[in-house]
Image (cartoon, rainbow, N blue to C red; front, side):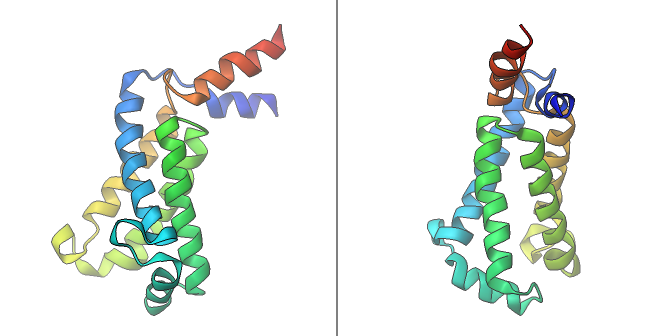
Length: 152
């Protein structure tokens, strides 16, 4: 178990992880805030749930809750570098569903609601799965101060 936790938290990345984590986390958290809390002009759980049901993601309210939570809490976790790999994995799955279920039939470009944006967010999250939170993250702090302290 300790080995799994260590592999989840360890990362040799430096500033590049922060440069990727923070803006992607902000984007995802903002989109999640729209879905969950009707922030930034969003429709909240009820409106988003109705829309999700209309595109076949049923039950709509539950799907809105899951997608909104993945984006909001996963985005916040990416900003802080807290459990970066699991947060990125949850968001990658969310973007994969958005890409194929919602955007696929609309072409490539953003102006037609195509796959462009979801693909960019999916790619960034997959990159974070591989590189981890980096040395400027809560993952690194936890690994150094908690896990390595127990070894002594």
